[in-house]
Amino acid sequence: MRRKSFAKTFALLGFIALGLAALYLFGGLGARENWGYNISRRADILVAISIVAGSVGVSSIIFQTITSNRILTPGIMGLDNLYLFTQTIIIYFFSSGGSEMISGGLDFFLTLILMLALSLGIYLYIFKANSGDVFFVVLTGLVFGIAFGGLSSFMQVIIDPSEFSILEGRMFASFNKINLPMMGVSGLIVLLAFLWLSSDFDKFDALTLGRNMAISLGVEYDKVVLKSLAAVSLFTCASTVLVGPVTFLGIIIASITRFIFPTYRHSVLLSGSILVGIIALVFGMLATERVLQFSVPLSVIINFVGGIYFIYLVLKVKRV
Amino acid sequence: MISTESLSKKYGDKFVLREVSASLPENKITAFIGCNGAGKSTMLNIISRLIPASEGCAFVDGKKVSEWDSRKLAQNLAILGQNSHNSARISVEDLVAFGRFPHSGGSLAERDFEMVERALKMTGIEDLRGRFIDELSGGQRQMAHIAMSIAQDTKYILLDEPLNNLDMSRSVKIMKLLRKLAREESKTILIVIHDINFVSFYADYIVALKDGRVKYEGSSEAVMKSEILSDIYGMRIEIEEYKGKKICVYYQ
Image (cartoon, rainbow over all chains, first blue to last red; front, side, top):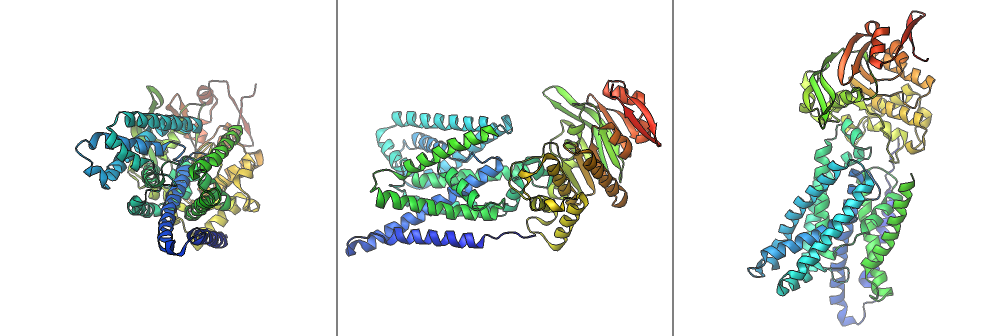
């Protein structure tokens, strides 16, 4: 029995990723005296978007597997809005004594913990209450996303203006304004979460067969699902803190990955999703910065393309 | 041995299984019969830890199902549920290989490949090995899933309506295969089945459920009686002898 290793595909994707990265790093450097500054800044950005690509790709694939569908991703479920909401709450309630505390990474960790608790609670509620109805889950996710978005805006309006300015700096990160100071922490979280999950890749393979069969094959379903959802929340925090919410990035990366790697093996899928994500994002950065001259933000392009694709997916699945 | 002790399952306050205590014989084919909603699948699902019991417990080899390590249990007990279809794009060969998952984790050894080959051969679907399961007919897919359960090579095999979607020749083939596994390889097989004549020909032991209770239990010979079956199914069922076997006639 042969098991395709996809070595050639990986090599090709790796080559493309490196090529694009080099193009981004060294293309159009301008005057010679700016080289040092430009290159180090661009290198930082490359690392940051690699972290985003990895966390969004891996979390989307895992989320799709444990919910047995090919439409839902954490972004579509409004998880990044939940992150913004949590961040707003933290700053709203904890920062009145002065801004020292929120200037450090401490608020990020508080956000992380609160976010874990909230998201796990919501997931458990949704999936326990509606076993298997994908449409209900999508709808609930969207509603939760909008609700949290609205609540955050509300709190931001009534918040102290000086605190709001801190919040603004923290929250309105985007691909044009990547929150580089958080890169180290966020990268560390992604790495740890990935290592934490790495022993479960085989179990994800079995989970592809659905809950009952996975249990029949000896997978401790509840434990694995809970662990993965916790990891998905961590991944979402890590990517949202860097570039803000990008609702439809996950569905693009996950779909392309599953198309290029037609397999159920997650050791392949997950590593593949990281490469695909890096290629997609670096390509996007090149296009917005060099071709469109920043006239359209990358997140808008991603949500435009991803949104149309999402509608297509929903319509396609509905007919089955 | 598989047994249950005052096992109950209720949804809301409606009991679907009510204080069932049974111990099932080893190395035999035990058929669960009864109307839709009598609690057959529920019982199988609780024994195989797919759903939790509301009260009471199920035992496998004298140990509570809930206390088994999930992987260890999967090495001893395989369940093929109803509607086990999924949309994943997996080849038949890979699906059957998943049966080795409890033994090997993700990486298959030589012995695992042998067991997969054997299961493919026993179910006669070697020619389908490269096909994807979402491209198969319902019956072929069912055969692939049965092959997966056989590849799992467990002492206990639980099958919930395995003959669904299968034509007569395949149904007979599966039942013969199960009988062979019970006789020659000392497997204990629990099977939910609706076609009462298949039960008559192939089952060694029958558990008949009605309204969530075990109403009759015993050897095939003892349970295959007109008055018992009529009571279980709530309709007139005649029994005729044909070449020493009992045939139920209920088409009126």
